[in-house]
Amino acid sequence: MAKKSGENLEEIKKRFNKQEVDARAREAVLKGGRWHNAFHIDAPYSLISDPNGLCCCDGTYHIFCQWNPTPINKNWHKNKSWMHTATKDFINYTMPELSLWPRDIHDKDGCHSGCGFVEDGKVRVFYTANSRDEDYQRTVAQRFGTLQDDGSITLDEIQVQGNPEGYTAHFRDPNFFYRNGVRYFAMAAQRMSDPAKSSRPTNGAVLIYREKAEGGWELLGEVKTDYYDFGYMWECPNLMQFEDMDVLIVCPQGVKHEELKYQNHCLAGYFIGHFSVDSLDMIHGKFHELDKGFDFYSPQVFANEARHIMIGWIGMPDLTDTVESAEEGEWLYSLTMPRELTIHQGKVRSQPVKEMDALRKERTDVDVSNGQNIPIQLPKGSESDLNIVFGAARKVEVAVKWNDEKFVIKYDRDTQIIMLDREGMKLGGKGIRPFSDGKNTDVNIGTRKFKLFTNQELNFRLFVDNSVIELFLQDGEEACSLLVYPEEDVAPVLEISADKTGEVWQLGKFNYK
Image (tube, rainbow, N blue to C red; front, side):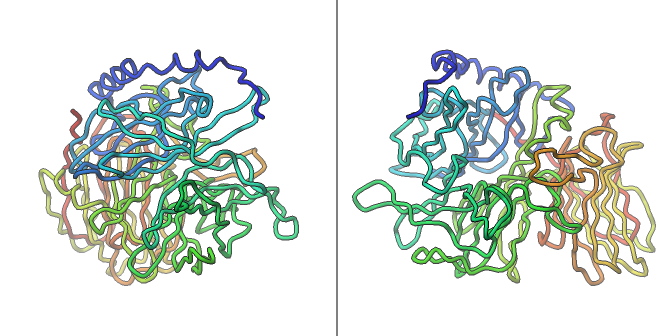
């Protein structure tokens, strides 16, 4: 039996006054700031992280995410709660508000990640309630909740209490899926390792639960993959069907870095193949990353009208000290634009949902030949859809410049390697970041390299917001998300050392009401 909390539950509950939090969030959104983004959902203040509870009810999309509305001495990850906003078109949103927060013995130490679904015309959520005793030992429970008209979530019954034998209390992030009319959920888990199979004390895994006809849930077991020893924890599982293919998204932590892949401290990627709910076998190919940028993690995907829509977190665990907006405006991180996922030639591709086109305003056509490096003035908030023709050039360089600062994309045709380089920025993440947790090696947060196969042309869509860049290469074959913090408040210039055609769009802003 868990010991009594060392912190009084009533004191914890007093931190979360929804009216006060919502008023502060509204004030922060309306005030804005130079690094607050125009077409990305930001933290109004403090830290946001994992997208949660994505679903569509009666034509309205509901987006929740992790949020700490009550930071204490910049302990950004304490007091995990959920922020909520809603939209019908991914352009106009309701004001961000506090929706789910610690309020009883089960979730007093955090409302961790979970999924959303619609039941009887109501938005329902399923999340991990986290509690610790006075010895800091963790107890977890998986719990239902229901969204109310005032934006708050009422708490319902506990569904699964504790963690199964052989797995640690790092047991969270339930995510529903359906097979043959039966409801299942996938769980992020941390397995106590078999010394014969792994030198790590723990390994990441995904567990599957099935809803019983008489009510409640039964543990079926662990998804069987070929990646037993692949990181010490797998977070945020999503199991989806694309016609005759299954895709399992997971976020492994502590995977060894390689020169051209796995370069973040925490990864987000997928296995594609076929999954059996009977045997729990996942017959799959190799693990692919969903995003090759510096700042992408914990995505969540939901299906609506034959589309698979994904939103990710533009951030990275353990790197809050590189976030410049935390110092100036005391807010940290954003969410990606909503992306539609498709499958092409055995890989998942991603592109911004078509609704984002409604943000386009003034258009500038680009048609430059003979390799002339003519700067393209970008507006503040832009989308560049360009096709780069190599010609005789063996190397191509694309630079986004803010006076004497720059973010550079380099492509070498001979090696088929893309490099992302933000070392030319004065602020934010760059250089080598040491991780001393004993679970991984140091990580380069200034440059990044990966393979990209092309023939004669390089196609890209480049979205530049005030502190976020999202890049989509070769029709979404690769995506890259990253944070930049230009020191000067100026509109950027785009420079490309190759022939190019296409258009540049000025983009408008999300509207909050």
